Amino acid sequence: MSHPHPELGTPPKLPKGALRVTPLGGLGEIGRNMTVFEYGGRLLIVDCGVLFPEEEQPGIDLILPDFTTIRDCLDDIEGIVLTHGHEDHIGGVPYLLRLKPDIPLIGSKLTLALIEAKLQEHRIRPYTLEVQEGQRERIGVFDCEFIAVNHSIPDALAVAIRTPAGMAVATGDFKMDQLPLDGRLTDLHAFARLSEEGIDLLLSDSTNAEVPGFVPPERDISNVLRTVFANAQKRIIVASFASHVHRIQQILDAAHEYGRRVAFVGRSMVRNMGIARDLGYLTVPAGLVVDVKTLDDLPDDEVVLVCTGSQGEPMAALSRMANRDHQIRIVPGDTVILASSLIPGNENAVYRVINGLTRWGANVVHKGNARSTSRATPRPASCCTSTTSASRRT
Ligand SMILES: [Zn+2]
Image 1 (spheres, rainbow, N blue to C red):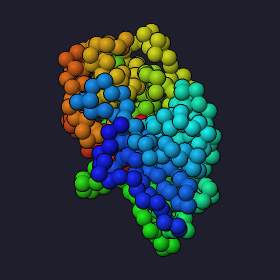
Image 2 (cartoon, rainbow, N blue to C red; image 1 turned 180 degrees about the vertical axis):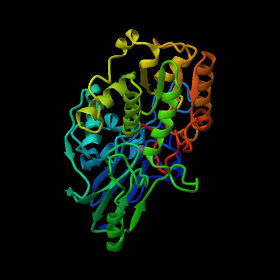
Image 3 (cartoon, helix red, strand yellow; image 1 turned 135 degrees about the horizontal axis):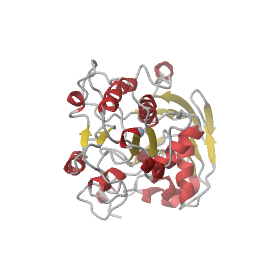
Image 4 (spheres, helix red, strand yellow; image 1 turned 90 degrees about the vertical axis):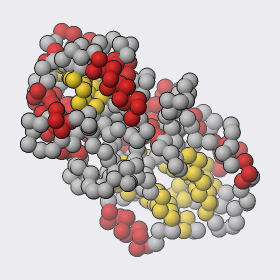
């Protein structure tokens, strides 16, 4: 593996009583978040994500954090704290556990369920410690406290790491939605309490930090969705992250209200929504969700398909539909909703997909045109709005 700074050499031996923090990915890039905390010869890792390749990186499936510096000290790792279940925070875990499968994973119920399902595909059964907000756990020499944060995936946590050298706080990705669908707010009181105690190092992250103003509440999106549903004459195809449980909840609610059935399309979407439903994060009215094959027997105006591909990912269902490389064939009159924020850097890929879908006759609704598409609504369109927070995806 090439090293970006060969001139730096090996870091010095850590002085006694010192804490060293080493990011192995995620700085200056959107993805592969991974930070190593080192104290007294022991290591605690926060997150282990993947980075998705750019279009000028053909043939590359995933980009991992650089494990080189920890490869020789895997026995020193006390555990991996996973702040939330997005791929750019958990996607690298299987590749690290392949090197040492018994490194414990620490995270919330949903986060652990998502990574366990992923690890099952790699035939790894991890050691896990489920934690929730307000909980404090000693993980080896690291005294960890977990704090609720709101994000575009439920059950996200920040972590305060206390060591004799000082306290570091890693926020993970977060937003400040004051009216979240699940009522679980970012716990500002906890952050205030920690700051009074004295935070020595704050590690925080915010995509779109340069965009001023407030993030519209997640629940505002339901108005736009309902207007689009009210006007759609034929099938509705919604592309979203396979982890955006609250957004998909609103799609299910709109489908239910407008008498449509829903099928999930694509492996990660089917798997994650099954987990979210089983654990009670997704509420699905009886009979609403059906197998994709069942949809063939229904009229077009009673059908919703929910798939991945809102970022133009070439192998995701939506890109393949745009390329006529998917069993679901786009026909004139279909409505396609891109129901996730456009992550900076993905513009070309996304517009290529929009062009493809439009060419087959679909009416494509996305952030750029949601306002006019849903002009029947009295409220401003906020479909596909950006979040303050971070994360590349699912
Ligand atoms: Zn995230």
